[in-house]
Length: 209
Image (cartoon, rainbow, N blue to C red; front, side):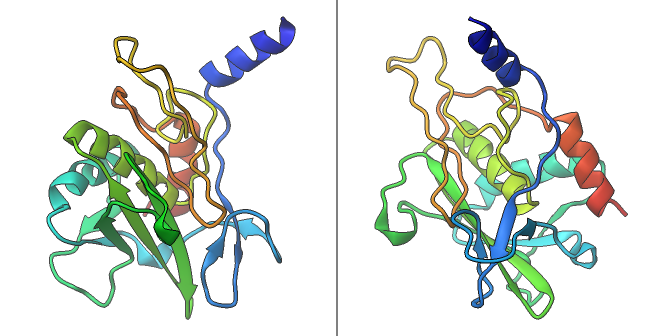
């Protein structure tokens, strides 16, 4: 009984802010699990902010709103939409149907970081059929872009599991969204969420001008 109570409080109480742990492979790609070398917090060079975001195809309509929400919630310009294929782009966003390696995605997303010559970049892929779900997915993935790890607090946008609305026709489904080199979230019918205060304080400390 006490274990159930502790689990309930953990899921319903904001947790301390946390960054993803990574090991940088010789290729420059970030490794998020099953580490094969030294591990460090995923932190961007502050000089790269605001992060220029290039959106491929017609996905801008799905990406712009969560970008602006991150900027508003953190109180400074974290992301800036790039209108051309600039050499200074830090984040590339793709709409897609499959995960890396051909895994079927359904509704969800993934984020991958790379580092080269002192600069960092991120690739975000997502798949959705509605604006609400796209907002949730992209907002979550942009949190990973900034280095945030998953959060067990259910009201956090970095909570990794699906939360299905009570009136949904199917029962709850969950996934931790981790694929070794990929972090993501699978989203059902979710209410819009805001960044937790611990995560907000951490990101402002790291990146605010």
